[in-house]
Amino acid sequence: MIVTISRQYGAAGLDVAHRLGELIGYPVAGEDFPKIAAFRLGTTQDDIVAVEHRSPSLAERILHNLAVAVPEAQAAVAAPSFEIEVRKETEAAVLEAAQKRDVIIIGGFGNAVLRGNPNVVSSFLTAPMAFRIARVVAALGLGEEAARKEIERVDAARRRWAKLYYDFAWGDSHHYSLTLDVARFGIEGSARLLADAVRESI
Image (cartoon, rainbow, N blue to C red):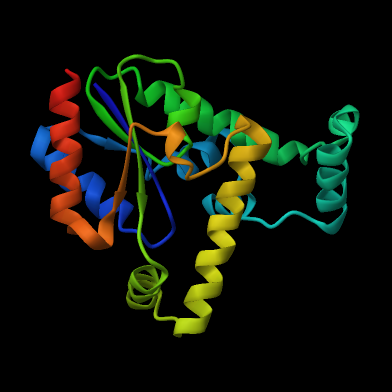
């Protein structure tokens, strides 16, 4: 069984993924997707992350709004070529990881890349802003306001990427097998709920 984990920034996705791996004996893939894409594209991991988390330019926002109002204008909305190459290499890494019979894939929009695969349990991890701010402050040493802005920036980038490349609303529960509030259930509880879901799907 393949488990995909998508998450809001600061929602303890990696911790849940690794605990889930311990519970069900699956390896975790995804942390190295930026590194893999960087190697294949001859660039740095920082460049890959910057592209994935970038904000759209004013021109891109105008074109996007035009395409929403006038569907015929959709062809005019084009992402930068390097961003497209990053997406292709990340998708390739997701597909390669999915070749394993049992694996947990975190990030890379695995739920979208593997959409239609009957052997996938897809999940989305969420948490209240206060919970996420506290985790980002602890992890990066930022002030609370800076942490909030970073969370909003990364989440907005993920939302944009999902809509632009996969035409779905990031975080919408209809696109996942299971949506969990990590603040409510904790890392251990969230991992155990996911483990139960995997066992029920086998």
